[in-house]
Length: 545
Ligand code: C2O
Image (cartoon, rainbow, N blue to C red; front, side, top):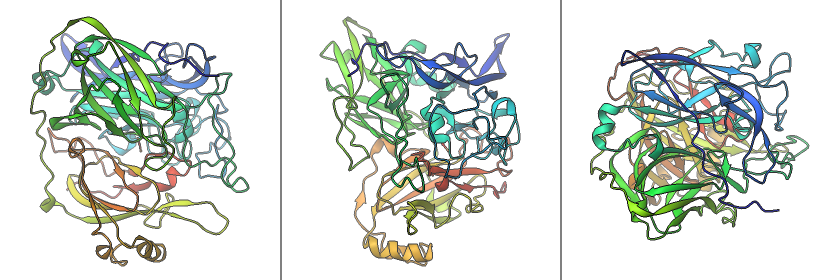
């Protein structure tokens, strides 16, 4: 049976301030957020669903979790506490490299602040997992309390589970939430801080449900005799925004700010409004642009973020549907259907326009990438590798996640990375600690020949990458030209980026040691059950300098 759309009101997740105020002064704050097993109503007509939820208590835990509002340069200390039961609510593939508690009991979890610039011990390394009551922990675990410096530029991020081999199911179960750094001294003059009611994070993901309300996850793999539950990408037909399937929101005829986070496993969204309204794109993953960009449609890969202004006073109709037309898998999979082609509905007040100021022509001027200052050039090839009976493995330069550290950039420097995507899919690549600017994206010529060489030598230079990297150039869209932490690596293309380790705009000196164990990772954000294999540690050997 079909669920009716637009019957649940869009929730605003609970907001937690990441700072305290004492005598009018903003001071650091220490607090706890738990992970709880509970039931959550995704839709009026769907029985409540078993989920894992973040919250300050079992009662207040939500899917997605609370929005954490931190203040620039005021530290937040969070103790993430695991209250999960001994058994998972979703199946995972036991044959994959997966965090495994020695007692075999408990659910390994660890939290990564996606886009955060913090020390490695607080970055949520996949092997720094822990179980209920910190009873058991992974080999890279060091400390119970995470320290977030909030010293980076203002922007929108998200936190989510990051445990080895379980990231995918832990997030599918509900472990994710928004995290915003505000810096009123530079944001207020822009006139874009509209206050809680008009500045809304939208955490969007897809899920499938059984009629009893439980999350549907196919548990028969493509090659069940070896990997019983392995399915490369997860897709569900229900589109969930802030924990409700196809919700609605009543809005005034004024500007709203939406911080849209694609928290899906593998679904890309190409958002558009059915009444032709536009998005004024002001920022993407964790950083503002130099100038706003007006868009009719907005393509977001898993884990990308779009911070947009929508001006409802421009609407000719009294309602608008936020729709989606991204094929899945993107770009060459199935076209959207009636269900996953709709996201949510806005019901627009027919009366009074409310003037809410204009959007400035200039936003933030961050230092533009200086290629001449790059201290290193790397070639990083993603490819899939089939070994007889075995299903496909994902590798970076021929190495799996278990291999030792491959990249050792120095803190404070910039590097050029050429990301070579030899797989069939568009991979949203994410680098921890570093922010990057996309310089160029080009199609590879004679791809098969190059692939053959790479399978043998695992080395782009030895395989004469320059002979292959001069194909057709794809334009980087204007609104994706700024600093980002995720980018869509097109299949059969080489994407050249300038990445900075790291990017603390206001103060280039480091308040912490980024060189310590366990280091940082970079990876594709599909969170396949094989995602972890694509994660390669970087920066462990980085030296301040
Ligand atoms: Cu959003 Cu390493 O992850």
